[in-house]
Length: 276
Image 1 (tube, rainbow, N blue to C red):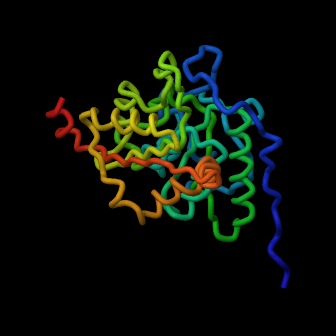
Image 2 (cartoon, rainbow, N blue to C red):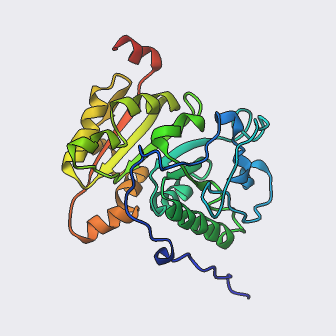
Image 3 (tube, rainbow, N blue to C red):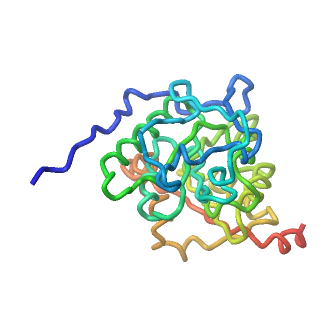
């Protein structure tokens, strides 16, 4: 019997880029849609739109550009079709995306990463996994885009669209003058509350204790979120993936260091409004 065809995994060394960049800098210019009606999700998840996956990449990077010139049909823009429900913000090299895809096979999972070359790596990695598992369609529910979430989140997602949003080992921005760049802060939490469905979950994990306290404290103060005690989620496969399957989590584990996680539930909108 013929053996299973082998597909070469992309090499990280060919996609290296500085670890962090300033998301508030005007020099970080990235194409984005006018609103979610302009996004054709079928190019990112062809299997979920009854289309053939030809392996073509549209990642919104220099090498794999994408344009959003006009409104798309409701059968592909998420109004009357499959839609992204799980978002990994700053997905890095895609470890969580790859771990979540088989755990949530019926959910469309998207990683957003601001670094151009790193986004290319994740796109190539998912392409390789899809080709390797073409007989089962596995990993057809995972995709990635280059994007600046701090500026363009609501250009992709409608009110109450997301069920899960992840922030894994984000840049701690230690200097006080740079705290406004932190991906979890008071003003951005309003946007996350907007795109999360009632009952949707916001996940945070970091190896920096001070940043953990900042993120957790910011969420505790926001009227739209309530904490789920992390000890009640110790065996949750999604939480386990978040804490153990990203490249950063593995690096922290090899160093014998702990990581700190928090999970918050999006309250019912009427409830959060009453508490403001």
